[in-house]
Length: 82
Image 1 (cartoon, rainbow, N blue to C red):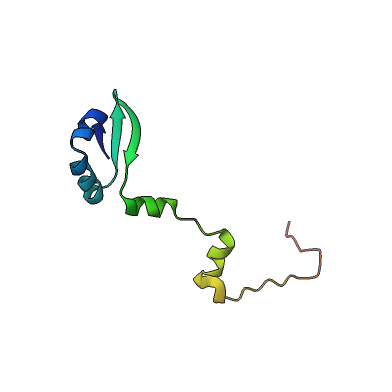
Image 2 (cartoon, rainbow, N blue to C red):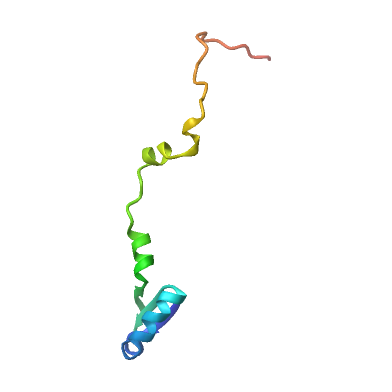
């Protein structure tokens, strides 16, 4: 990630915006400390898009057509070889 000082970014803001769209996020520092990150609107939309719930994910899964054998044996004991 590229980083810029705030004073430098203010003077070249249009260039920075173009570079964010082509190169990805850019960090902004004030007095050497990171304070912000400038991201493109496409990246922002992707990051803030609501995540599907687990149940919804499973319902859309390709595995929904697979039939699982969930039957159990009725006996409570099993043989163990010692």
